[in-house]
Image 1 (cartoon, rainbow, N blue to C red):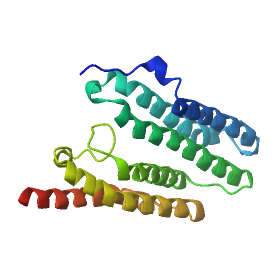
Image 2 (image 1 turned 60 degrees about the vertical axis):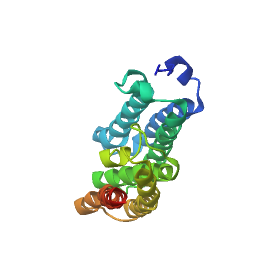
Image 3 (image 1 turned 90 degrees about the horizontal axis):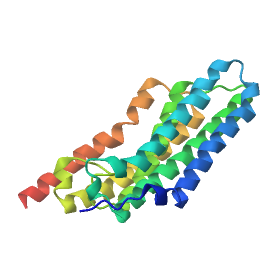
Image 4 (image 1 turned 90 degrees about the vertical axis):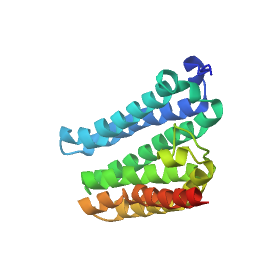
Length: 210
């Protein structure tokens, strides 16, 4: 199969424009609020970390379908949810860091664990919302080998996991914005993946018996 992915054409698509807009908006937000920061060290958690995450994610999403070893498997249809997740993450990260900088400008400082939990929760919420419509692919979703070889098990696992990931995402955002977060709360954000792993094993095992 020939890879028809056109990098120049990709940059004409709306998801690219949304992503670039929110990357630039994040930089603008930072420089608006930076005068209220007590020292330049606040550039690390409020500018460099989120900006680095967004730029790296942007490069991966735009370049991976072109240069991946499995690029022949990518089609326009299975790239759509990938693009949606990417642009949605940029929007969510920008909003979260805007809120954090706004709060900090009023002298209420979030610690780094709050930021990590919020980012993890937004990622779970965004990815979970795509699970309901995914079909087996190697680009996005739960890439357990026993699911990739069984379309029915894949669909059932992702449909059930969608509710779990979305619930954890919403709960994590509420906790991250409302409480002082500790390391155990951050570790708990990995539970949706573990739960999905268990669900996938149970469902795949049932289908094998049948």
